[in-house]
Image (tube, rainbow, N blue to C red; front, side):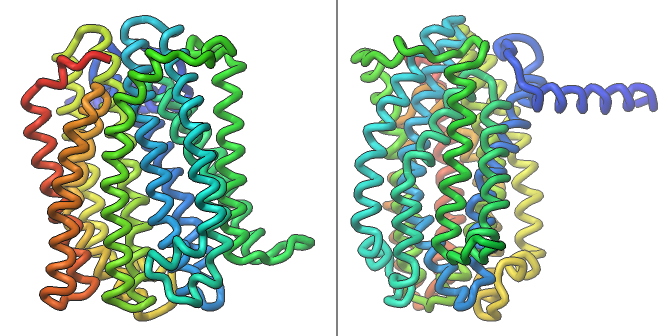
Length: 473
């Protein structure tokens, strides 16, 4: 390759990066698949990288409070429960992405806007229920999770605020799913940028105090996170209701539509259950670590999980690009192009996750020491990070395959995969290793990559079967 040719390719690559960050309306059903993946994936990766910042920022700042292991345990156990909220948000987002992408592929932006509005209506009803439960039963939730009495006493207010503010979590995910389905991933990315920056600025101010602002400790972390997400949602709503883009929601779109709502629920409920199954498994694992280990074990495990999530969410962003490409290309009656898009995305994701795997295996100790000064927490956290990180390549493959099926509207089979691999394999295996073989928390850590590998293999076989190409949305 000549120097000029190489220079031209590098210049073209960076021009695409700038184009993807700028955003705009592109036809992803035509032209280069590599270009389509890049235009979608870059803002999606940055979007979800910043979503992971919420958990990492909270755990970092509360990890430097007095009695930090109780604070870390509170944040970790609360986040384990909030994954159920994330599951509902992701399920609704999956349904909205599939329907909006299919309508956009059919060149029907009005239908796409209508589907998005119906998804928002449904989400608002659900959040009222979740927020009420979280506010009333915060202390009981921590107790059920296996938290020690002192953790419950210190952490109830944090849990109450986080669960009470579920509406901003769900809307942030859902509306970004609408934008992703429309192919405008840059707006979704910017909303997370805004929310994350505000959270980063407010967290130290509200946790430790600044000037006239009193130190609020854990309570401050919850308030900062909720405010950050709320402002991110306000930014999204501006583009949904006030922008001049083709996907613009109007009052008429919010008139209840039984047919569209039924279709949305048909896609969303298996997707929601799909992620609730995964979340439920993670809750059981967190509880098992707490019961077979100490508070140090819980804190170390949660530090490892925050780092795991930090790198998995960007990979999930790449997977979401595959979902959008599948939905839009199926809408445009181009199933073969949809399939090629998925396999190319798998290649990129596997390469990224292989790099992360090496990082976790060889640098687990230094990474964990960033988040805590407790020696025992550091030791357990590093062990968890090495073991969990060993299966990262399979995580990357499985995520793309699962999201591709979801993007096609085939949400039932991924749900079955999760049910078998998480509840019938991961949970029994973790109990067997941690209690039956007396391995304690280490047994739980080992069960995680084992189950994720099984998910990757199962999803690949189902995707290769090709029946997802026949799904009607």
